Image (cartoon, rainbow, N blue to C red; front, side, top):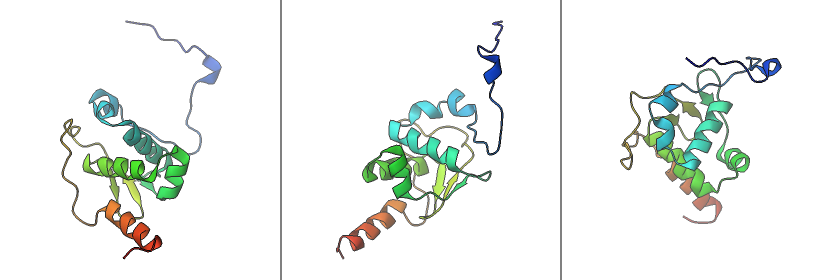
Length: 133
C-alpha cells in the first residue's frame, strides 16, 4: 500500500463556513466522463452555488457571465444536465439532484422530464424582448 503524507501539511483543507461536495461516485461510476465541457462547467458551478438542499437561485445571465458561456451553450448544457437527471429546473430555481443509479448512456439522452421546457421559456422571453410575437 502506498503511504500518503500531505505535501504541504500546513495547508490541509478544512471545512469553514459553507461547503460544496461532489459524490465520489461522480468520478468512480463514470458520470464525469459522459459530460461535455460546458455541461461540466454548469454542473460544477451549480454544485458550488447551491445550498444544503441543492437549491441555487442564480439566473442565466450571471451563470453565463461567470462561466464565459454563450447563451446557446448554456441552454444546451443546462438542458442536457436535466435530461441526464443531474439537475432540476423550474424556470427560476435549480436543484442539484442526488446522483441517479447510473449515468445516462453515451449518445443516448434520457427523456426530458414532464412540464415546461426551460429552453422554450427563455426562447419566449427573448422573442418578446426582441420584438417577436
